[in-house]
Image 1 (cartoon, chains in turn red, blue, brown, green):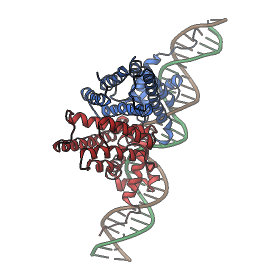
Image 2: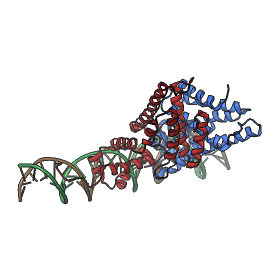
Image 3: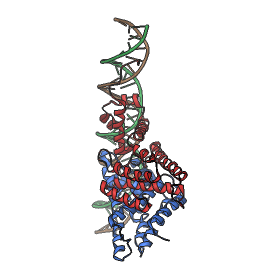
Image 4: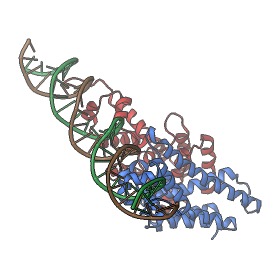
Amino acid sequence: MKLGRPAEFDKEAALDVAMRLFWERGYEGTSMADLSQAMGIHPSSIYAAFGDKQELFALAAKRYADVPAQYMVKALEQPTFQGFILAAFDNTVEFLGSKEHPSSCFTLTGAISCGTDTESAKLLMREMRLQNESAIKDRLLRARKAGEFPKGENIDDYTRYLSSLLSGLAIQAANGSTRAELKRTAEVALRHLGVER
Amino acid sequence: MKLGRPAEFDKEAALDVAMRLFWERGYEGTSMADLSQAMGIHPSSIYAAFGDKQELFALAAKRYADVPAQYMVKALEQPTFQGFILAAFDNTVEFLGSKEHPSSCFTLTGAISCGTDTESAKLLMREMRLQNESAIKDRLLRARKAGEFPKGENIDDYTRYLSSLLSGLAIQAANGSTRAELKRTAEVALRHLGVER
DNA sequence: GACAATATGTAACGATCGCTCGATAATGTG
DNA sequence: CACATTATCGAGCGATCGTTACATATTGTC
């Protein structure tokens, strides 16, 4: 059995609140006081449970990857290349167009630039974006083995191109594009990609 | 003649330094102390010359639009639609791949998210991104009048699509893509756009 | 019930934040 | 030279930053 006084809060629920706040305001735009109030936990308890701000941010980022960002994993798991591409755009549009959470990607809004003393947050976000790109590349390699990858295309170039398109949609969403507009933009991209529905 | 003691610094040069710092570290990541030291001007003189931090940021953003961001204006001024598209991607690649300045776009790194008390910086960046999009749309309208715009495409959708692609390249650059990689990514985009060199 | 262990809550730490006051220095005007 | 005007400079304002110390409360174990 676990010794000592039990925590009065649910750890995952509290992390969800922190994730949401970092997602909306970014690492530097979110203060520990903000987090304490939103999570309903006193600062000292946050430090005891999650460590310092950087560690809390890393945990919130991991929570993001594990839950909301699964839309991309779902796309990557599609059995065919065409299914993957379609799902990647469809799921991204649905995700970015949702009103249940901030209209952009945590890995962009969390920290895209920062002061000299908080670079680790920026580097973590970049690492997550690159990891996403790496997952796309793996999926394309699998498609090539299956003979589905377009002839004449280079895997690395195509990976960066897809990553650019999806990042671009996230910026569009941050610019205020509605779900319908995102959908139309994605349809243009799909048509130019030569992927039929 | 101008009365009083003359300023000891060049206003545009000082703004360039501020622009550079905001570009690298973002609005929230750049402190007035950082700015004061980098610009070589004491805080009180900065306030006297440029106003508060928000005003300085707005001036730095305007300076960005007037000088480094002219690469996009140059592209928009190309006489033909094809010339515009090619120049848009070529100039963007060259800009993002340059080592003379931060490897991304001020309008993204300046402020993509922020705390509740600094939203005006974020809104200014969004406004600038939307203004850029608006300029692209105007160029496409001109192309349609000239009969150069691809049949079957919608102007608004195509505008957002182009904006997405170019924003996506900026994220790629922020991810650490080299100039050569950006170039290759842009070539894939151009090929899918159906624009021949 | 004594005790170890863990969580909570209060209060505050030193540092940094954006910003400003007041004295001093340097200019053109009369 | 006297004066108005503007810039520079040192010092420091109140507020907030991330973080922590410490006393108190609540648990399981013995």
